[in-house]
Image 1 (cartoon, rainbow, N blue to C red):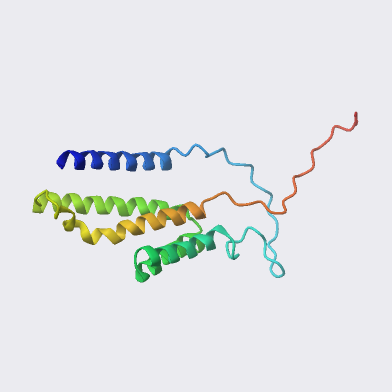
Image 2 (tube, rainbow, N blue to C red):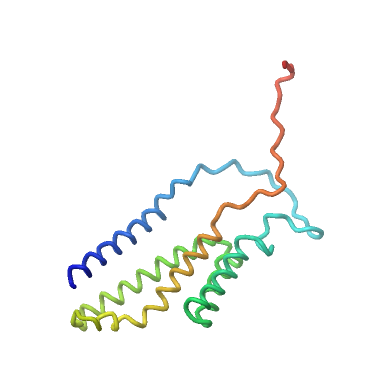
Length: 175
């Protein structure tokens, strides 16, 4: 039984390292585009498509998803906690990647708590061993919900109705 547990822990550790590596070494990062020239903001009328306060914006979808999934998977109170975290990250701070970073921080705290409990209490390795960490189950599920909400919010925005700028010509037009 211990051999299977060690293999499972090693695979889990490798999975966490792979996830952290994917966060750190994001291959889709490109050089920043040239900044657009400033233009005045519309004070009234229709909202622009860049605002996060639309019903179908990634920020709104991820906040609603974090609330609903958290309430269904964990508990209703935890759904409100996850939804509140997603709201603050997506709407107040406007940095949805903070949900992913917060998830990594929560995992680090949970790992520190587990290591502290094992080194101080020396629990006997039997079928009741996971009972020492039962109170960490709901924060662990919240990590999964926050990662899900971060993945939704940081998705590529859809360009609706955007027209490509005209290509400049040299003056003489040849067919």
